[in-house]
Length: 173
Ligand SMILES: [Ca+2]
Image (cartoon, rainbow, N blue to C red; front, side):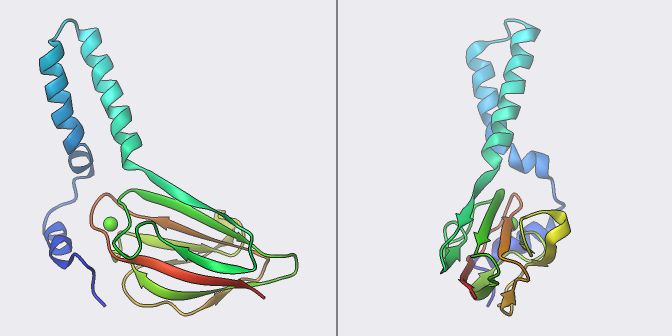
């Protein structure tokens, strides 16, 4: 299975990555319009405005989601599945099973922009010491079973190009 926006992906590869410029293209236009309306009353007003726009730009870029799941079983889908997850996603799901139980996750669908967007798996809470593997691309990963009663997934995407996303079934055993 290939990405849903193959053309877009290729266009991206042919150009050098310019995160600052791409991320703030909208803000740049807004900046210009606002400056025109307000005029340059003073340097202080101008730099205040630039700072506010930079803050709103960075805020608008990050998309957070996820949550804590405590049921015996269930499914997790990336936001927007299967029509594409947002750019700038930083979503963490923590699955908590009953004590002494293990958690098995079975992938039902998986498509993330290869080498740019990732799903990180943690055998426990989403802490670097629990890091298990990082998945990307368009191949369905094999099932994974935790060694503890907690298992976490974290989706991170960059600033451009999306794909279907993922869907997993989890079960406490
Ligand atoms: Ca991406």
